[in-house]
Image (cartoon, rainbow, N blue to C red; front, side):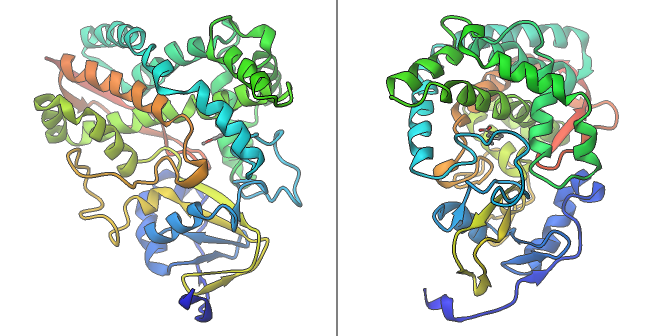
Amino acid sequence: MSEAHRTERAASVSVDPFSIEVLSDPYAYHPQIRDAGPVLWFPQYQVFGVARYAEVKEVLSDWETYCSSRGVGLADFSRDTPWRTPSLLLERDPPLHTSTRTVMNKVVALPRLKKLADHWRVVARDLIDGLVAQRSFDAVQDLAEQFPLRIFPDTLGLLQEGRENLLIYATSTFNAFGPRNDVFLESQIGIEPALAWIDEACRYENLAPGGWGRDVHDFVKEAGLPAEYGALLVRSFLSAGVDTTINGIGNLLHAFSLHPQEWQKLRNDRSLVKRAFEEGLRWQGTAQTFFRTTTRNVNLAGVNIPEGSKVIAFLGAANRDPRHWEEADTFNISRQTSGHVGFGFGIHQCLGQMIARQESEVVLEVLSQRVASITPAGEPQRRLNNTLFAMKSLPVTIEPA
Ligand code: OVM
């Protein structure tokens, strides 16, 4: 509170964080925005921003001041029409958020998740054995995209037909947190049928018995919440559970292809699998940015931010802030990564993080048993997205173990 009397100006930043250049290589631009000041101002969008670890954590910790119910993208739901019906988790505040989150926490509970691990391992072995036999493959298209799609829709009990809509929908959802730029508009092509499929797929009668999708509906009922919450909460799994895990695994494999010594480290000590996943998220996170909206005038790091302001939090920049991390830019799977904000922080911290961990750990366990080395075999290609740091292609050649 002693800081509340200091008033400095937010550092004005002229670079567009949603431009092709920045989205292609956000890490090249992070030092500039971190060093500009603790609180940033983007005149082009009329929004504040934070890119240092301390301020990102402060904004995410204080949900009463920095709310989610006015949208976690550039759009302010108090003025602008939301792109889709707002999420009952991501785009809500307590007390409603608390009741929906409580229901969903039951669905993703660890004992339930652990029961799936053996089956996921069989799928991973099958997939990876085929790729190892090929020697050369695309680590994004043939592995990172395939694995979550082979297990997660089945875990939920989704319709078999039309699953290609999952990626179209998720890509648009994450693009919609940013401005209506070309990246967003391109992802809108063919979105109408995808949205219609998503709505259908989330209905109780279209979800397979025994799957987590039906469990969501059942737990909603048990908790005494309105029945129509069920479908919308299933939708959160479809929004947040596919593109995120795909790119988490893709970015991690990219990191290993660039750091062969870290791959050897993992092969020599498989107890590093858990840390390797966290370090992958710290070093090259999937969700790069989320917004909050201020509910009151607030002084952050000496800068007055008026009520009703949008604040963009740069998670990826915070995760490499040298003010917090030693050798912040180094990918080191044996480092202590606790406190990274790759899953966000506070009450909205990733609900599916244990699912993401289990998926990635299964892939890394099997891959580190079967593969002695991963070598780039062509230029990796990025897939530009207003929120996600994503890859389209990562050609590699592997040496079998
Ligand atoms: C949701 C949702 C959508 C996108 C991301 C997310 C990172 C959640 O609809 O609940 O969490």
